[in-house]
Each structure stands twice: as structure tokens, then as C-alpha cells.
Length: 499
Image 1 (tube, rainbow, N blue to C red):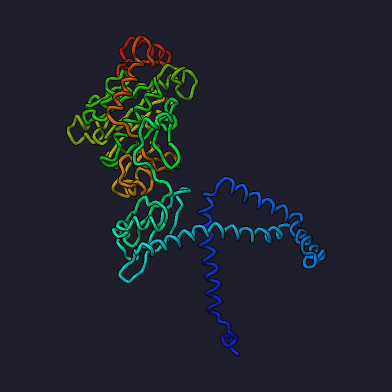
Image 2 (image 1 turned 30 degrees about the horizontal axis):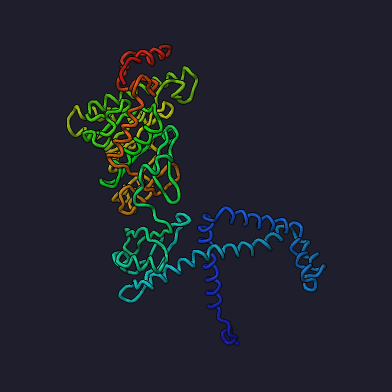
């Protein structure tokens, strides 16, 4: 009698085993993803259950508990015989079913979400000419309330998803943040969120979140306000296409820093006739530079000041400049549209030399200035080795990237294509500091608001009291060589200079 006659089909058995293994891998895959977003209470509970499992394994408590409730089935002899096995075997007997249940429960969350999303597509009536509906190929939890879906469109154009956005949102019972086409037409990415970022964040509502010296607000993300401290960065690169909010961000950042750091000196190099930083031009502690030749000179003076500060550190045996103790103000150098500065070599020989000099000095400052409390903020529409040299890029860890038009442009700034996938909302950006990446809505303040705040800042300089430990660096001459023992003379010989 054959196996088939007995009702046993080897093919079905192998198929069943394969389905179990495949299902185990899928559930484990999604369980691992879900575990990253478990609440603290859930993680503590799971840890306690695992600890109890280990304790029970060592003492054979689990079998004696079974004997207590079912003495006829789990007899004392049975418990003694099984209990002779090592505690590791006992632990595995308990842990494997326990972990299997945990994996199933966690993985089932994502599986149910995927099934619900596929059902949402069917409910929205999205299908190709053959009647086949799109399906979810991958689900990634970006945050506890935000997800990214990789969708196999089955030939349905992305425009169809856009047209039926409201139907999809209704079917999924969640908000659609963005629908993003991929390089491969077969797929699109769908971003879902239970919370939507505000499309506009008023500066007045968030500026108070940053109040320490050197601190500024980057923007609002989901459920919190992102702040950074210039002293920790110590440099920042800001990129993004025209009209997406880069210049507004630079203005509000400088304003926030001036409010929180009274002794901050700001040197704004803006070769677009100083348009971006024009609101600050009348402040005594701000120097707005509009000409290439002057930009090169100012950068050289800042480099000279950096070297003098290194001498101070060596003399004092200190590791970093303390503005109060060493009477040296923190310095912020903002270069907006830095490509205009570094690409001036195309204009003339004089421009070429000035541009090369500016690039070399910027590179030196980026490498060495952390201890000197000198900080760089570079603004540019796009990053290439022509706009910002790779040497400078490598020494600027802080990144804020507004929407860009290419995957490469996004990857060069924040390491992924996520900035290309940003919604077309002014002020929306990706903030990357170290390994942490946040999507933020950056603060907005209009011209009248800046004017009002700058007027308040100007009152700090009224009368004899000044919040600075030294004159504006651009007013100091470093022409004479200063020996290590003459540092104090340099710091005091220019006290009469006008701020």
C-alpha cells in the first residue's frame, strides 16, 4: 500500500513544514521590529517573567506547581525523574514556549497591520487593469506613531494613490503623511502617522525651550521640541533647495543664540548683499560681511584669534576656553550660500586667491576650533566638493537638511534619502546630530518679529555696561607676533576699541 493510499502526501508535509518555518521567520522579523517600541512597563514585565522562568527552572518550581494542581497526572515520581535533568534543560522547556508566545503576539501586531492596510487598498478600490490590488511588502516602525510602508503597486501608478488619498486614509483609520515614488516604478513608499507635524511653528512659542548659553531651538518633532547646544556640536551644516526655509532657519537660529548668549560675537558672511543677516547688522556684536575680500580678511582674523586662544589654553593648562574666566567671547561664523564664497575663483585671479584662502581657513577652523569656542554654521543649496570641500564636510557633524531634489543630495547631507522624501512644506527639515535623526518643523519668525527682538537685544549695549569680555574680533589687529607671555597684553591693549 502506497503512502498516497494511506492518505499521506509527502509534498504536503514538506509544504506544511516550509510554511511553519517561513511563518516563524516572518513573525520573528516583525516581533524584533515591534520590540523596539515597547513601553518601559512592557519591557519591565517581560524581564520579570524571564527572571521568574530562570528561578523556576533552577528550583523545579514549575513541576511542583503542576503537581500541586494535578497530582494524579504530575506525580511525585514524575517530578523527581524529570527534575534530575539540568536546570538549563528545564529553562529551555519553559523559555521556548514563553518566547514563542511573545514572538507570536508581537509579530502578530505587524501582520494584522499589514492585513488591515491591504484591506484598506481593496476598500479604496485601488487596483490594476487585471483587478489585482497593491500589497505591503515591508512595514517599518519609524516611531511609536509613525510607519513607513514599502508597497508593491502591481502596476498601479503613484498618481492613483494620490487621487484616492482620502479613501486610503479612511480605510486605514490613520493619517497619510506622504506618498513617495521610488526609483523602481514597481514600488512606492507610504508614510503613515497617528500624529501630524504642525505645518508652522511660531518662534515665540518655542524659543523659550532653549535658554542656556549656546543653546538654540532646531524645531518641533513628534511630541517634543528639538534643541541643540552650539558648544557641543560645535559646527553645523544647513542645506536645502531655494524656498524651503533655509534662510529663515539661519535667521531664527542666530536670533535664538544672541538671546541666550549675551557675549556671543557673530560674523555673518553673506555675499548676497547681506540679505539674510541684514536684520542684525546694527548690533554691536554682529558683523555682516558682504564682500569677498572682506570675508577673507575676517576669516583670517578669526583664525589668528583661534591661535591666540590656543596660547591662552596652554598657559592656563585648560582644555577649552571659558568665556567668563578667560575673557574671550564665544564666536559664531555664519556663511550663507557658501558656494558663492568658495566658488569665487571663477570670477578673477584675485577672486580665486581669496576663495582658496577662505576655504583653507574654514577647513582649519572646522578642524581645530572646538576648544577655542569658535563655531561654524554653513548654509548651502546643495552639497558637492565644489560648494563645500570634503575636508570641511568631514569636520561638521551637525546637519539640518530641508527638502532636496535628489537622493544623492539628501545622502550627502544626512546619510539617507529621507530629505528627498520630505513633504513639500516650507520649514520642514531633517535634523541629524550624531546617530539621532529627527524630522522637524523649524521655527518661523517674520521680519517685524525679528526687528522687535533685535531692538530688545540692542538695549543690552546701552550705557557703559557691555556683555563682552573683548572687543569685536574684526576690530583687533594681530599683525605683531605675540609671545606666550604677552597674551594678556593682546587681550587688554584693545579695550578702547569700539564695539
